[in-house]
Image 1 (cartoon, each protein chain N blue to C red):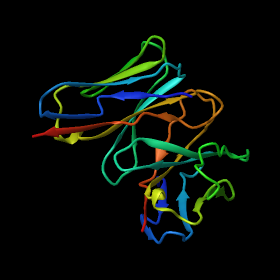
Image 2: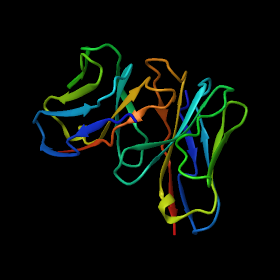
Image 3: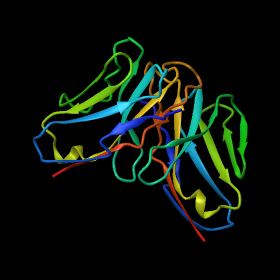
Length: 117
Length: 112
């Protein structure tokens, strides 16, 4: 079956502009995650959606960042008034279940490389 | 705050050599996962370990979860150029967050 897809694959934007990044999770996966990865670094958690529960937004770095998940499927990460420090690869992942399950396994999309000039 | 520290950060070896990557924390995790990431792609799950002391083998890769479930290691035997990539460990089941706690990764380069 299809894996996690993300669009666009690359996005170049000017400082101060808003951007939207899209994630299509694996069908049937109830949990969806957004991460940010700076060049050669590990993954920084941003936000987590589990079913119809309120999302865990504890990783969002500022109020310029927001995300929504419509119909329990597709998710959009929005960055308003982009800054140069927002430049990174934004990765989306989904898993069959989330939360406290001991062995939830995350499947990642290829990421969106965001460059803010 | 839960942290996972990986070492070494960088590793460059010749084909055929053995290597071990470590993932350590002061926190207990209910599960630990290892991922490999190649340039331009998302991480791909290699293995999940859930029981203290558990050892799992995946061809030339051996994964071990510490008895106290605070640390893990990845051992690669007779490394090949195809093993090149960023290896990430991630701990799960900690705290109230549903996310995984990721280490910063070990960048492995295997030269032919």
